[in-house]
Image (cartoon, rainbow, N blue to C red):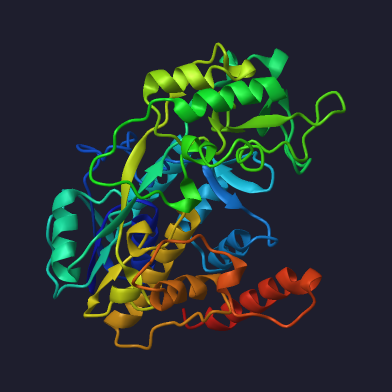
Length: 426
């Protein structure tokens, strides 16, 4: 039987390994867990979610929803685990993180074609079929080896939001409501008056931050809350603290801090948009100025960590293969995709096409009519002089000439029709 090495058992690596196994390929799946952890990981199980428990919007009004629809039609293993462990969160697909990781790990361990090896990989044989899915927190020795192949490295800092105990929230100053009106206790809203907001903003912009080593390069899709605040007094009110769609006693608050359900039991909530690099004492002090959180029990405080990714336009083709060596594929955020859903999708794509490559068959080109194809095209066609990861969005797909109000439905139909025509070959 054919064999492939998959390095990393995160979202992308787990998906890739299962897709390979289901197609009769033996997989050596390597991961440093459970004996070692990266700075941001704590769960001994695989596919650990760090920044959020949300896989973003699950409706076809958003490209992230269409991407998931494409993946479900192709029997995504990780997405199936997400559906099985989902929790109420309005129109988004959010999961109970502990149950989700346990589900992925258990099924990987049961798969007969997958050999899980607990080992840190520092180098790999360029002549052997290998998928690098080491994640955005790729260990330093492996990063060094990849850099020796590509000749350069790129990275940005990613910030993680705090988590608060539901029991410690003061509901004299908080209320349940979803902006869409479709949620069921999915979001807790902590309103701020004008004076409360201004006092909070003033302390936030001058609060002490953790010193960053090397250099700081914030990714625009995940800016720390204090960095956003420094861009202007009203930036937060038109961003993560926007009160649009929320009312208390028939009035719209001046600003609202939203807390999103973190687990099925509703015992913990994530501060939406509050990724931060403030020191722990400053987080307790400044975030404690929010009336509903004055006596908060912090289950996790925010941290920042370095995310590593390859200069995809320079080194990868649209099939996630290394241009200089087709034996090697990159999957997940290290490939240059951004986001949980996108990482799962890249693992699925690598699994499908690695099998094609092993059998000397034409690789499956999903085309830019689909979100799956648009991800690979974005990596291949980006500007190598200024490449930054990007979430899937409808702007990455091939334009379609229909009235604006019909455009998203047309995108979805065209995409899913193409996936249907490709399924037999896949």
